[in-house]
Amino acid sequence: MSSPLEIARAAWGEDLPDWVEALAVECGATSQNRVAARMERSAGLISQVLHAKYPANSSAIEERFRSVFQLARVDCPALGTLPAHECQDWRAKARSFATGNPLRVLMFRACAACPRNAREEG
Image (cartoon, rainbow, N blue to C red; front, side, top):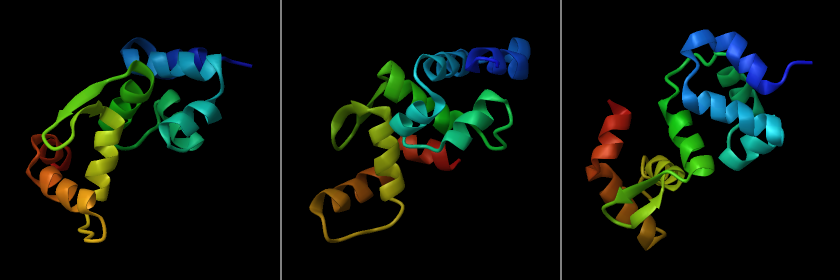
């Protein structure tokens, strides 16, 4: 049985990104399911990335991995410095307006004007 790192190296070859290699190492250290759970993504998505079969742009997955496992942080105009995956979550919530929570209203406005959000949509 091949390890996640061997699978990633075979699938990606010399083009193996550093973050995919680190993802494979994390999967080998615990399990693909545990890594997926920590990233709040499916194990199938992690498998697609390791096998170089993820059909879409993987920049959001890379950002999430780096945030959860490598402690990547971003500067939010509304909340200050926070983990990049929390920024991702706020951007997703801000796609629809909700008035029941003042923080959601604040983040709806802040995310709409944020350059990180504009880059993701572009």
